[in-house]
Image (cartoon, rainbow, N blue to C red; front, side, top):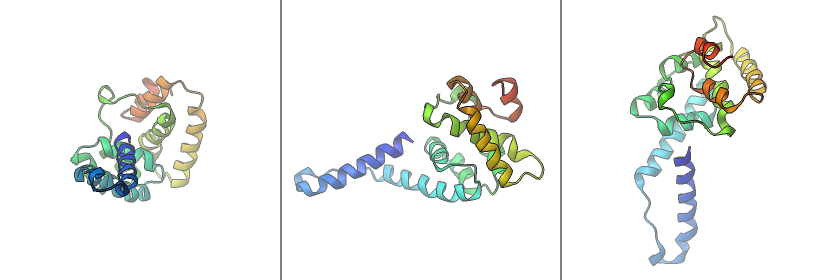
Length: 163
């Protein structure tokens, strides 16, 4: 996410400085712009396939992802498939998330790991579960919210995070 924001700020700065004359021109990394555009395109399509996946969460995952994980974000068809096949790396390798996005990530993970696996679950059930989780998450400390956002499966949310 930081890289996308940095890219956006860099592009705005470049466009605002472009009128300063030829000596003030700045070269931008084509690779950086291409990578940011790639994640935006991937996430626009991905959020349409899974209502509980927010654009912010998707962009955060995509920016940290290698080519295999990006491919998974591009090709999944259901929230369940996203939860099972496109999981984040194990907890030790993940940074602590910022407090503003902790609940979003925690509740998205909860819905993907627990609710989407319920036989016959609907998008309405997933949305209600997400909304309920967001209400509860406001009462959690950052350690619990982080634990919930990186839990690899539903049982670990209960056993390790105290859900």
